[in-house]
Image (cartoon, rainbow, N blue to C red; front, side):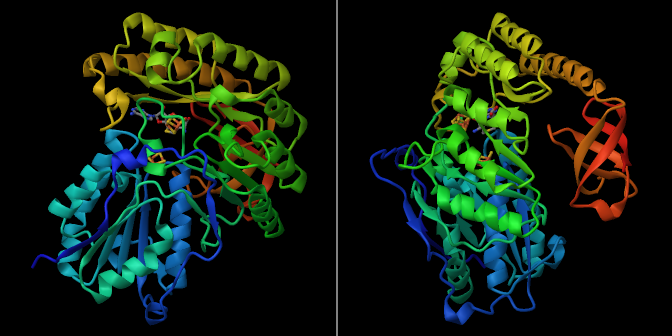
Amino acid sequence: MKKIAKVISTPDFTKAAIRNLKSLPEYQYESVQIPEDIKNIGENKKYFIRTYGCQGNLRDSEVISGILNELKYTKTDDVNLADIIILNTCCVRENAEKKVFGEIGSLKNLKHNNPSLLIGVCGCMVQQEHIVNKILNDYQQVDIIFGTHNIHQLPLLIKEAIISNQRICNVLSNQGNIYEDLPSCRESTFKAFVNIMYGCNKFCTYCIVPYTRGQERSRKSKDILDEIKYLKENGYKEVTLLGQNVNAYGKDINDLSFAELMEQVALIGIERIRFTTSHPFDFSDELIDVIAKYPNIMKHIQLPVQSGDDKILKLMGRRYTRQQYLDLVTKIKERIPNVSLTTDIIVGFPNESLEAFENTLSLCEIVKYDSAFTFIYSPRENTPAAKMQDNVSLETKKERFNRLTSLIAKYELEKYKTYENKIVKVLVEGPSKKNEDILSGYTEDMKLVNFKGDKSSIGQIVNVKIIKAKTYTLEGEQVV
Ligand code: SAH
Ligand code: SF4
Ligand code: F3S
């Protein structure tokens, strides 16, 4: 029997695009309401969360875990055992969306066998109206749809879904509040993601994120610094400051600049500080100096270039030229010796000629990235680029993608080779994915190391001698 859908609110693209730059974000310190009658609703029940997409989504899933724990649910890694399943989705490229629909489809049987199972879909994908409609119409098994702006309402939505026995959809378009009091259950006990800001105002023409994550809004520096102090006191070794464009931190409120914030974070004395992502457009000299000055700020910068061609950069709305980007790289390399630079690149953007693509290759030859995430352009509905003719054939896109990835791999291996016989510091994460007897972790400059070592050092920073470099990993042995 089909359940009725109670649609409280659906996302609206026009509203999502509005930027009300005059209004300050509202900070909420009492946002999660747990109704008395569902306080223990999760007792003897289990939850399962699958997270797609970026670190921002991973952090949101930690908050969702926190909320479900408050309702007394316990976590399971086996989807078949769950009483509530949450899919925290991403829509940055078409592939991401396809995977989610595949997964929702595969949950139909579970729901059939256990009608009291609750299935929730949240995250960026459902910030799009056409996706919400598709789920409401074609995927009856989904009980709860909520967005990136109202995670704090999850207890109420669960209550509605259970008590009214209806499907519930509540997605806000661009709310802009900052919820400071949300419970969270962090994945790791030694490394943590810390949001410093939400949203994005850059509106690169290909990108859906500004619509799914709303207006750029910064947390107060005091709240961020208090969170990091708390993490340090609780034994955390590493924090990664998160934002879609961290260089814009503080511009919307009267607070510290990103460089000033970084300095204050460094002074707290936590052992490793990372940040992502920094847009080249407003990467300040002060920031370069702060990174250079403090040993606990890791010398790794993710500096997305997207393309090495001026015409394409302009069509992408990236706000810098090839030369400006290269000048920034030169300045960073001069002031931060041994800096590790990584990037994001899109191939096959509309109107990308062979010459334009080769400009991207030549830029990579100049910069010699330590590594890069490379993507085939994927039109996102309602973005400005989606209105441009997607006129590079799939075959050409694939061929360019392969040329680019092999060039990146060449420089990556060259760089990794320079680590052979050196001793590096590794924050030990746990057993490697492929071999239980091998440990793995990351160097200060974000290289994955697989090594023979002592399992008791998980969560610690240890010295590892690198024996062999591979294209994407280093192999070594722990030394004392
Ligand atoms: N805020 C970050 C990026 C977030 S999205 C930044 O500006 O760096 C991560 C990456 O996905 C982007 O850097 C871009 O390379 C890629 N991407 C975004 N939209 C895309 C699209 N429509 N097609 C292909 N790749 C895309
Ligand atoms: Fe997307 Fe550009 Fe914002 Fe990054 S800076 S999230 S690529 S719009
Ligand atoms: Fe994806 Fe949303 Fe992050 S679209 S990359 S989960 S901001």
